[in-house]
Image (cartoon, rainbow, N blue to C red; front, top):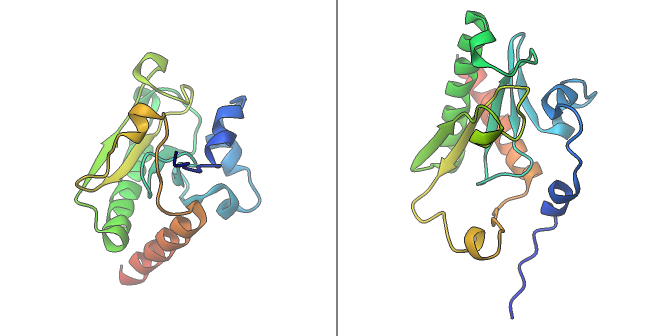
Amino acid sequence: MEKLWAPWRIEYIRSTKKGCFFCAALKAKDLSRVFVLERSDRAFTIMNRFPYNSGHLMIAPIRHTGTFEHLDNEEILEMHRLLNRSLEAMKSIFQPQGFNIGVNLGEVAGAGVVGHVHMHVVPRWQGDTNYMPILADTKVVIESLNNTYDLLKNALNKIDNLQ
């Protein structure tokens, strides 16, 4: 029998999910340690620590709110600006063939963090799904979070230099 090691998953399984990890991440002294890629006055981009695919990002407002209807126009615009930058960075690094971009509002809709709205950005490639999530409840991620963070951070910095 072959064994697949995915030791990073145990942290998620054992987590107690106390508080809002988005707000906690923004309070970190070193944003790179919590995988925050960008932060503006109104929104920020953070890597998903338990990604569906390599490069899985989330974009959220700075302000803690559980509904999109409570976002002001500046927050909405800034989230979409960060979305565009994320797409451009991921295309330059990973050359995905597509993206899933979505929002889960409410626990019944699959929201893991109900109180802080956020968008998911997941790069996709032909054939990137397999039997592992179905048979073993395990997702194979091909690159370390630290390496992906460095690649994305550098790509975002290059975008800054071009604009």
